[in-house]
Length: 422
Image 1 (tube, rainbow, N blue to C red):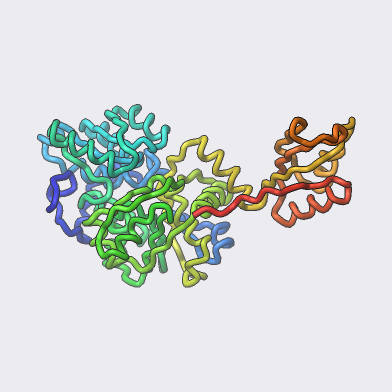
Image 2 (image 1 turned 120 degrees about the vertical axis):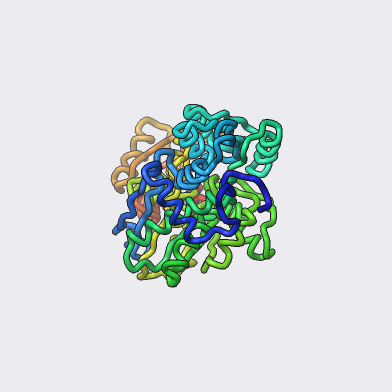
């Protein structure tokens, strides 16, 4: 084995089904067995028979608890006394902090500066020593490696340790029990550990089940590894799926996952954002970008072969910053054509604004915000420029509103349409 870590204690370098079965028994009672439920609403919009695995209902909000507990339980007594260290953007850190506290094992986590503030604060609340370092996971790991040497801590890799992969694989064993005649599973891909564990569990027991991986286009390190034939560090851009923002997939995870992966899909930020909104509205669940990525893959239209099939979406995490969630929802409503913004010129005489509001109301639309612009609105003091944000049913309703305003003599200068982002 290439490095000393918690996951290598008593485990095979190449994880096998027996390791996953043992992990299931080991973590039983310490980790939630989350529901996997049928979703009629998501089935209708995707054309598949959709089941959702609610891993965001774990106590720390993600599937990472499975691997974390499995790894910590295999530490020798000497390592338990000194403690463990890990680099994580949040979910792995939270899982270690929770189960470290439960098992009496000191935990240090190094988080990159981009780690969500809500995850940083929660780790501290759970008693972990939290250090902020680096622009991404790779840079955070540099400090974690130093602490491992300086303080004699055991490093628990978030996606490449054998025990972590085996723990993640317990999800696959549960899906076999929960969804009869399963056709496909869509798995979020960051470092590759979840994909490897799920792949082993399903391909060894139900080889006909399709394993589809999904990663953000802005952090497509697994796709790069596939093209290159081996893990390779890539340059990333910020992504809503911060839990998948890994610049280099794990070597062990990649070796185990690549032969068990049937399809790999990249998704844009717009699709991830829209998937978060759909899950809020249709599944009544708050899911982070990484957890919404499987639905984004179906919304992309790149998986026509899954139409009519029984498909599980792994909603792997729900730790999204509330302010980010609010912004994502508003932006997604705009992308969905349900929030529109336009600039118009109206009379600045008494009643001008009331006429505008009445016209909007008559079409069934709802005003969210109106701002006057007098200073830069032009020399005609009888007219005023206004910027309006209005809620509508859909894009067709927005067109009806614009036509109603034209009939009333209101000139709409521009209608803002959110642009696509990769």
